[in-house]
Amino acid sequence: MDKSRKKFSDVERPMIVESAIDSLFKDEGKLALDELVLKRKLTLDVIRKFKLGYCPADIEHQLNGRIITPIYDAYNELIAVSTRHLDREHWQRFWHESFDKSFFLYGLNNAIESIVKGKAAILVEGEFDVLALHSHGFDQTVGISGSAPSVHHMSQLSRYCTDFFICFDGDRGGESARNRISKLRKKYCTDDAYEMNFFNVILPDGYDPDEYINEFGAKSFRQLLINAKNAKLGFI
Image (cartoon, helix red, strand yellow):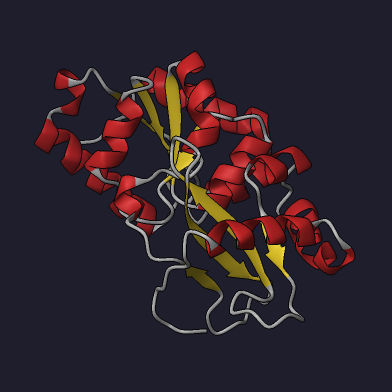
């Protein structure tokens, strides 16, 4: 596979996604489906809702052997394909098309209704964090696809709610992302100008949201959200 971040054509991209969805639920996709359901503990409803798929390993395509995670904007327009190889030792396990992550929130198209209804959003880093939390009933979750949080992310979410639960990974990367949000809040005066409320959800060191909820369950994760709001945990 070319190391460069290329883009598929607007004609080829949806064909890849539809073909991958079809393959995932056939014999050729069994290993990938087992990875998603048995190891990742995603529900079939979430797998279908997010249109996850698999590119078979035995076909001649640059994405062969990869789980396909399509990226949609808030209006259900397909903007990019993100992938991860089933082989964890693959030299380029993660690959995605080029797109400006600062303008898009993964899963927003599927989360808007719940965000508006609950007047709150849960913001995480990775795509599989989003999928895991949705699988456990936290449908208001969206992700920054592992990028740095941006003012555009905050602006998008402010259209739908005022409460934001920041649940980044319990590592240095997560701490850096939280600090980034703190700087954006101060720079753009989001709390006062846009009446935005931020609650910092603290995970144990080394845990990602998907790892935490799969190990400790939805009840424990919900308690983390409650604790964050009750304590009014914010940023310096």
